Amino acid sequence: MKGVNIKPVALSLALLSCVALGGLRQAVAMPVDVNSADEQTLASAVVGVGPAKARAIIAYRDAHGPFRSLDELSAVQGIGERLLEQIRDQLSIGPGGEPTPAKPASDANRPAR
Image (cartoon, rainbow, N blue to C red):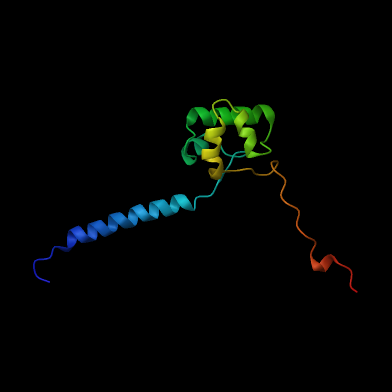
């Protein structure tokens, strides 16, 4: 093709790829464990939580022990129901928190008939 400048097309495709991959990376990001995360992790990885709220989460955790459920975050200074719903999908509860559902017994543990 004569007279076609490919550079703008290539730059546009590169920009679109970066935007798409950035959105994909955010969509597959792992939740942050509120029982083990430090202030920096909470403030940088959880959209809606800045340094002040991160410090408040850690102060509450230090004073009351590990969070047993994400709903308990509503007791933290500065975290209301609306913010909790906004950040819920970005967080998880690690060991010491919510009990995991019981698993059915495997067939290997059942007596032979």
